[in-house]
Amino acid sequence: MNCRRCCLALLLSIAPILDFDAMAAEVEAFTEPYQEVELAIGESGILDELRVREGERVKESQVVARLDTRVLEASLRIAELRAQSMGAFDAALAELELRENQRDQLRVLRKKGHASQRELDRAEADFRIANARRKMAEEEILLQKLECQRIQAQIDQRVLRTPINGVVSEIAGDVGESFSGTERYIMKIVKLNKLRAKFSLSPAEASDLNPGDYVNVRLTQPASVVQARIETILPVMDAKSGTLSVMVVVDNEAERLRSGGRCFLQTSEHATSTRFTRD
Image (cartoon, rainbow, N blue to C red; front, side, top):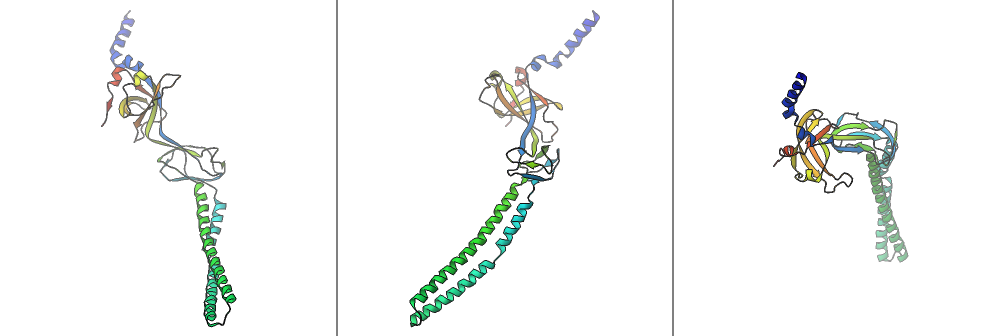
């Protein structure tokens, strides 16, 4: 009898702390990175270099990996040499100047009656041909410069850069492996300065919630209660569960909170009364 009385007294003493009503109304979810990017290269090839490791922090636009580009780099050097070669252009320009002088001289001789019209017509045709060859030489140089840009673009497509600041969470291959941009990603980058959690609430539970509101979310890793901002409330209800998806965002600038931990959103009257909207 004394044992029963002791147990009853203990339960009565901790009942205010346990708050059974609020605990029963909690909705469970899991935190996840605010943003996760699967990095892939749009070209097929052999992975030649990995510049980061799993768990390493990266900055936006940082080069993290690259495919083998030796063949393209050799083609680029050839195209650059051709673009810088002025031999054909100089020859075409010299011929143009020669044909222009011959035409001008025949024009003078024609006026004096010392050259025939046929000779002058031929000189005019030779000048136009020489001018066309000069233009072709200029166009060839321009085409080679464009070829350099095309090859450089192909090289750039084989260089993998991270689009966000974050942490390397997974590397899906190693140097020497073959990759295809349509088959698999090379690595994952996650953004952890914020965490996201998606709760499934009944329409009644979500009726008083609005995007931009702040609610209290209980975390387990580490154990704490934090304020989370409602980012999105999907307007379409899931037909199987009859619930609405409510997405909340938790600030994690110091990255003290761990992604993947269990979290709980209180939906009881007592819990919702603690919600407030920040300006």
